[in-house]
Image (tube, rainbow, N blue to C red; front, side, top):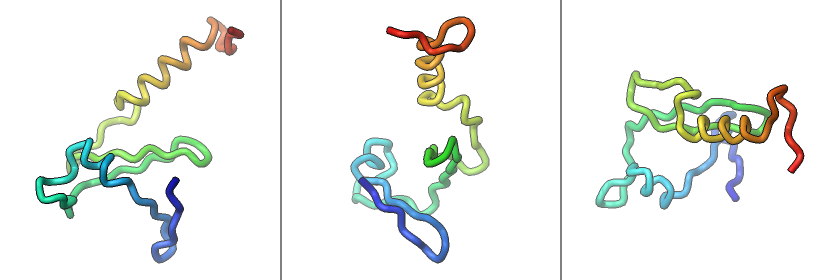
Length: 87
């Protein structure tokens, strides 16, 4: 579990290097890029999406595969009127 840190009045958290490496953000020498653009979207109270994007190319959050997957799972859990189905 990470801790929220105060960085001159701005909240900051770290992302484990192994996860960044899995996403191809760590080079062969084990270094992180200095110029990687990051977009943080607030989804709900206490819930944020962190995305690494190319400069100038920020896709809509709804186009993110993980968000689409969550939305599809939610739809499958609901009936035609939007009520959550009992299992």
